[in-house]
Length: 288
Image 1: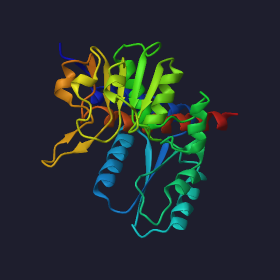
Image 2: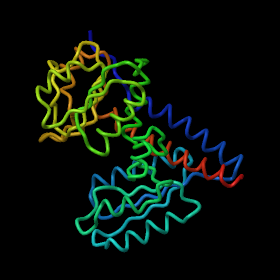
Image 3: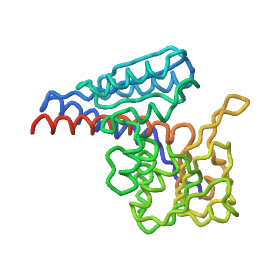
Image 4: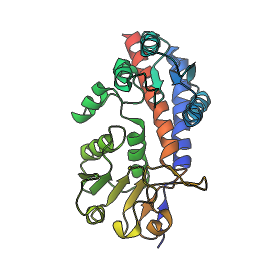
């Protein structure tokens, strides 16, 4: 029997409608309108398209946008100055520095310079540390979206065997921690994992985030598993595919997310959710 589709677009729209209502309500009751600063350095087409998508989603939800487009020749000092300015802007509740940055800029320095309480992407070491201890302030957007997608299936995370393929700081490690906090038994796999197919076949919940087109095949998937495909890979013909070989795997899995139309829309949605949450904290602080 074919797997049921986890429609990221539809789920994202449902969540965004709720965010829009909450944003309107927050502004009406407190006068605080959530604000996001987007910073794009250089002219990478993919990055520019992604930032525009985030901006359009914010505008539709009633979140204000401060859009900064900087030259590829921007120095690290200049970018730090702008980040610091946004840190102290009372109308900005979330800061997004689009990655990758030009080679003359140290990404870690910039991400560490963002106020952790405005770190809408959830990349700051403070926020990663709070996630480790189980008291998150901001959760990274893609992992947060993945958890929402799993929850949308109605499959309980608690007690399940979860396997995460990929150990990046942006997806693999945070989503493993989130699954652990939800009482799953979690295994994180990587390039040195022995007999990876056998480990994957043990998964009730399989999250794949390694950046290799159609890497996970049907023989690596347990019957009825929930499969979340985080990868986006462009083939020679221009078609985008995930890290999972979708058609064969969909005949074995119980639930599966598509590429495109799966995790991507949810990542942007969680950026809005984090920005709104930050604005709510600001409103509480103003009232006390």
